[in-house]
Image 1 (cartoon, rainbow, N blue to C red):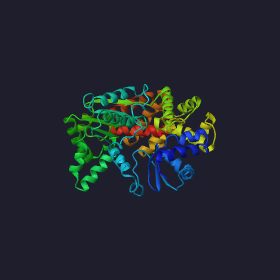
Image 2 (image 1 turned 45 degrees about the horizontal axis):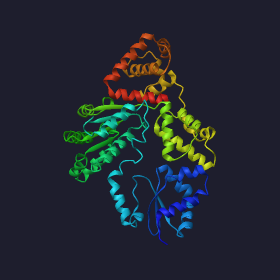
Image 3 (image 1 turned 90 degrees about the vertical axis):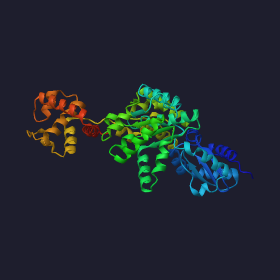
Image 4 (image 1 turned 45 degrees about the vertical axis):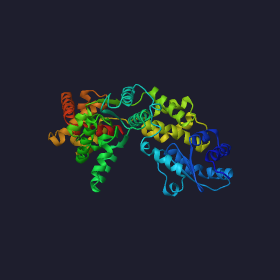
Length: 448
């Protein structure tokens, strides 16, 4: 019989639909795309790694049997996610036109097809960064160059960078757009030095129309990488090419970053992204449910948005987890089911009870002193400075009055606490490494 993959897959879906609940079918099968067929194998596209894992672990036998029933043949099944290449065993036998199709998409495969402006949810926390990104996408190298986007993990920086890339390519398919993480940039630089391919490396990153470099903070302290990126930046900027950079903090707060790079990062526009508010979190969940073609009741959306406040990645992950839990247990999605599915995540997200004893314990570990030393009368710098840091953090993280904080540190006067707070505040502004260290201590105290 003639093997038409689209026909086979449509008939296969009709069979599978009779074997599953509506929730399970819509969750795991509506987003699968047939990619290619050979004499012995079929390749199906899954939207993400999580879905791919569920399909392989739970539904592979069902899919194979349904395809056999439709086609009369035993096919080997492989799932691919966006940007993933086919292994040699499949790649050697794919039809020539399919090979050409994959090859045509190779330059764009570095961009996640789901990260577009259409799928980005705008709220008060990211409105400015979104507007800046759209302005750059509409007029590369004419609006803001460079565009520097910063914010915490999972808040949408990478999404905006990919969206810029997609928009520019849609407007100008011949544009050369390169997206790279700073870690990959460093690794490629190291390999080019080792293999004597410096010219090839430089041509790759300096002969582009748009360079998107993610997580730039990781080049801090890497002298050779900073040197190379400095010259790459200059070459692109002088050629009037667009540069977009992301980081988890603004340029002035990246420690051990060369001043000449820091100043260049500040030439254009700096836009920050803050954690989303409740309304934006709900909107993000609704958008995710629509994209993944899954149905989740509004009260469950509200429950997730109330419990998961840290970042978008965790928020969307919680939604997928609940739907998967519903499918695997054959139960409807309810708040009770969501509570079960997220019990360990919610437990980890509960705010930690913060008191001075906890602060002193964490500070003493970081400065390698004893907790009792912080309460003692010792005034050596090795003891006094950690004590001042602990007082500063106590003032920042607790509601205790100044006299009460002083009491917690061996009965010291409130003026001592004021002096400690002012001193550490000044030191943080002058020393980015100290700022970074104290931020780390505060995160540990909070249990983050």
